[in-house]
Structure formats: C-alpha cells, structure tokens
Length: 502
View 1 (tube, helix red, strand yellow):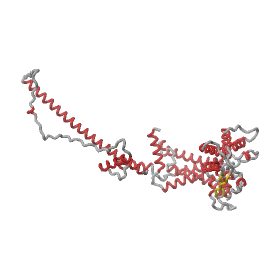
View 2: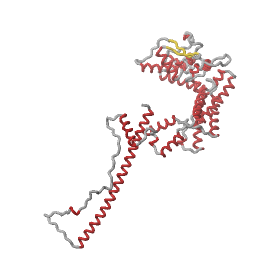
View 3: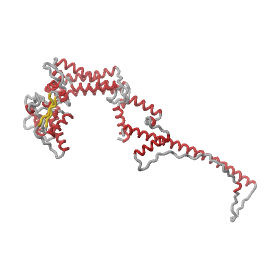
View 4: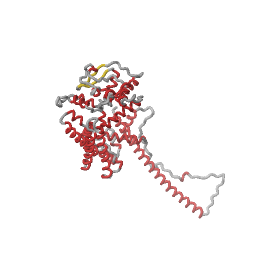
C-alpha cells in the first residue's frame, strides 16, 4: 500500500468517525428535546392534579363530610369507572438504533477498512472523492486555501528601491573588505590572521594528542606538525611522481595534497581515505583521470570493523591537521613560507573538469586549478575569503530586520531573517552579486590578463555563495505559484514538536 493510499484510508476513517459523531449529536439532541417535552407535560399534569385535589378538598370541607375508615375494612375501587382505549397511541415515537461499525479485538486493518466502506455505502458517504475535502467546513476550507496561498506558496520578491540600495551597499562593503584585507594567499591582513589561527589549531590538536611542546629552540608549529605526522601515518601520502612509480604526472610537494583525494577535508576525502586504508591503495586525480595505485600493507588498529573504521577516521582527521599548516620540514626552516596546506573542501573536484585551453600555454582547466592551488590557494586562504562573504551575509540580514521592524513596523516575531522570505532572498542575491562584481573587477585589473593570477585574486567562496543564491532565485521564478515543500515541512515539524510539548 502506497503512502497516498494510506493517507486516503485514514481520511476516509476520519470522515466516517465525523459522520458517526454528527449522528450521535443529532440523536442526543432529539433525546434531549423528547425529555424536555415529557418534563413539560408532566409539569402540566401535576398542576392540573393539584387543582383537582384542591377542589375536592374544598367540596369535602363545605359539606362537612367526615370519612371514617375501620381498620378491618379495605378501600373500595371501582374498576368500571376507569376508561381505557385500545386505540390509544403514544405521542412520542421510539428512537431508532444508531448505525455502528462493528469491530472487536480480532479485527485487523483490512477488516476495519471493509467495515468503513460498508458503513459509508449504507450512509451514502462518497469515499471515491477527495476525503480531506469532506473533513472541513466551507469556512475552514477557505481559510486553509488562503493560508496555503499566503504562507506556503512560492512567490517572487517584491523589493523596493531601498532594499536594492541596502543590499548593494552591504555587498560593496564586503567587496572592499575582500580587496583591502584578503588579497592574494597569505599576504593580506585577514590572510595572515587565518594562517595564525590555523597554526594555533594545529598546536591545540597536537596538545590534545599528547604533544608536550618543542624541544629547545625548535619551531613550535613545525614541532607540532612533526608530532602529528608521526602519530597519524597513512598509506596514501605520496609526495612526488616518483613515489607513485610515474603513475601520477607532475606531482610535487607543492601540489600532492590537492592531487591526493584522501587529503580533501570533506566527505569525498573521508571516503577515499577510509577506502585507501582498508584496501592498501592510494587514489589521485591527474588531468581529469582517477588513478589508483597499490601501496604497502597498512594495518588499522581495532579488533572489529567499527573500531577499524573509527581508527581510519581518526587517521584521516589527524593527518589533515598535520598538513593544513604545511609540512614540518618546510615550516622548520628559517626562511620558510606558508607551506602547502590542504585544499578548500571539494576544490579537488575541479581537477575532473579537464576541458578548455587557457593562458599562454593553452592549458586545461584542471591544470589551471592545480597551479592556482600551488600559489597558496588552500583552506587557510579559504578561511580568509569566507570573512567578506560572512560580513555581506550578516549585514544584509541585519539591515533587512531593521527595515522590517522600523520602516514596515512589523512585529519582532515577523522579522526573523529566514532565507525563505522572497525579499530577503533577493537582497542576499544582490548583496553577494555586488561583492562578486567588485571582486571580479579587482582580480581582472590586478591579474594583467593571466588566468592563474586572475583566479588567485578571485574569491571562490563568494562566487559559490552567489551561484547558490542565483539557483534559488531562478527556481523561485519558474516555480512561482507552486507549493513550497520546505516551508510546509518546517511548519509541520514545528507543529509536531508543539504537540509533543518539546
């Protein structure tokens, strides 16, 4: 039985129950009315009897009649003086029995549904039509249709000129922050701050795993990285092409983290890391091709499958921490730079786009993506790039709340900046679009026409956010008038939690 059929059966059951309730209420009303009539007639008869008794007592008193009844005598009653009529009919008719659905402890679902259908046929209830429509009155149905149209229907935005001005200004501020404080990897103020926070995170994670600090005057970050490298070894950490037997071309210390799928800090990286550790393989991407090579036997700790999977996960996480701030050898040098970190989540997938011919050397997009990573476009730089995007997002939402509260004079409960609001969604699109316009213009001017330099200057996080908002806006435009399933699910979840008292 499909979910739709189950819902229809439940609705038909509710219709039958509603009909039974209505019939019971009508029956009770008739009974109450009959009882009221009987009570009224009894009151009339009592009044008449009281008057007759009073008249009889008055006659007896006026004639001075004294009744003496001996104890041995019995009262005399003349049955001949009573009148009876064989044709007498009661004024109130007996009530008919209510129709019921007969079930017992042995009745299963199929039997119950059969009883429901039989009852519906006897009472003339049409179950072949929409059963939900019959559960509501006309006024309830009109109110429901209005609420669905107002609250649960996808609508296009109705922004005014102030909405566009506010969102454009927020995007411009975010763009200026991106230009002035992010720039190229590791050079801007926010880039240096992100590098410093990453170093602190690596040292903090190392301390959680037993690192006691550097020995002597050794570099603190390099010491923490070295500790994690020794503690969380993996079998897919090949650093050069020669280490893979030439299977992966042009792989070096500066790009092996992006070519190795196990080094990706996302679900893709976790999957290939666990796969490589269990199957003694290593997976790489080279010019759009997925390459798998065999490695030496790698034994995961743990006595069962769950323990081994957990050990594999911890190896993956610990190894990512050892690589996100560069290698211990590189960071330990006096003139060391940032080192090669790990890629931005899902950035490794760009290597599968092995199309096009760009730049002076006519290279494909996958090759360009690798070269951009070699310039320091790693997760640390991704953290720095996310800050202007976050500023634009928060400022736009905050200004929308202020405008709703003080300009439109809405209640605070109606000023929650939900992304499902069409006007807020349009404002976010304009804000992030302005940020991307500023970012793209700056990158084009600074790159001098070089593709790699242009992409290094580009804020990938901002463009991804703008693209996701653009898809939502496009979907809302073409889905105008259709039901917003997400909004309905959210409302039902809230109602369910409210009924459960959560």
